[in-house]
Amino acid sequence: MNQQLFFTTTAKGVGPVLADEMRALGLHNVKEETGGVGFTGTLEDAYKANLWLRTANRVLMPVLNFDCKSEDELYGGVRQIDWRTYLTSGMTFAIDANVRDSNLKHSKYAALKAKDAVVDQLREKLGTRPNVNPENPDLRINIHIVKNLCTVSLDTSGESLHKRGYRVAQVAAPLKETLAAAIVEYTDWDMRSLLIDPMCGSGTIVIETALKAANIAPGLLRRDKFGFQRWLDFNKGAWDSLAKEAQEKRKDKLETRIFGYDISSKTIEAAQLNTRAAFVSDLITFKKQDIEALSPPPGHGVIILNPPYGERLGQKRELEPLYKTIGDVFKRKCKGYTGYIFTGNLDLAKHIGLKASRRIILYNGPIESRLLEFELY
Ligand SMILES: C[S@@+](CC[C@H](N)C(=O)[O-])C[C@H]1O[C@@H](n2cnc3c(N)ncnc32)[C@H](O)[C@@H]1O
Image (cartoon, protein in one colour):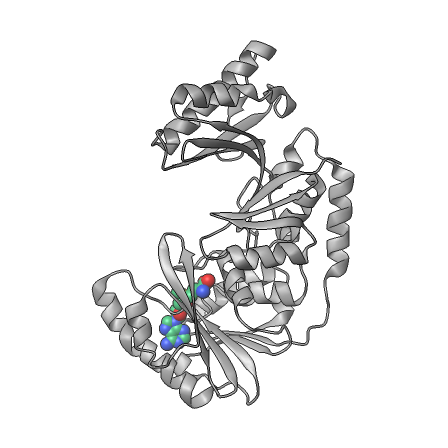
């Protein structure tokens, strides 16, 4: 099979752990870049990346780079690709575009121009044209224009990889699954010692922890097809054997124990439903509990929490005592553990009253956030 370049996208700050994951998966020429991590490999490697990577959002396959200083250059560039290789008139497609530091300023407009180029070419060559379906296309095309250089990629993932398929119950302000996985990767959890999320919300952190501990490929949970499964050259045999191999790698017995607590019983019910949908309910113990009552058993372990951080100013003030309580509980009851707090509000974090031993900058969507580490010895 041909070796080619791929690019996995992720949130700002996640690149280093994504690169580690990719090396551990045996991918070659792993290279961190702005917005993601590149690798070279076969299409089968891209299937594997989609199946196993916990912290990637998408795996893109670049097909062409060209200078793009105007809409005409964009239109002409996209038309250089023979789209008959990837699309028939009966298929649907969608184009995502992002534009930065370039003469072309508007992503939506760039997507529209690129769509015209695809449609016009296929209408000329085939006599008919494929339809656009933004929600559920057979082929997702990605246009990325930075400093007047355009990269056209095919999106092997289709729907973003953070949509694992287990979020059946919603709560307010859940973490994105890929970000929760990145938080777990950044901790020093050894997959054996105990792990607790005392403010677990919908359970994203504990579910991602359980998936990792049990060596469950996140892609096995996916409900929708991956992008590549709808491509004309989809190699079903290769995919089936990767999926079968992944099924066999699931561990039944864990050395670790995982706990999720939350003050709201409704939230705990939602977390339990999600956990069932991820097939890890036997691996996580949930309980309704206020953080004030947290009392982990003596020994070592990791505590990760993502407290509320309030959108409005008044809300923030109201949350100050909660952050102080977290600091007090860490100090009084969690000796021997390493504590992690993920928050988008540094002012609130000051109320924890403990000195962080590590501070990692991660982006929660547009919000610059911190993962703070506290050694509680
Ligand atoms: C930002 S949410 C956590 C979201 C979670 N990481 C997820 O992905 O769904 C914060 C959670 O803290 C819980 N919480 C607030 N105050 C609490 C307290 N005193 N003790 C325990 N949990 C609390 C809330 O009910 C909420 O579910």
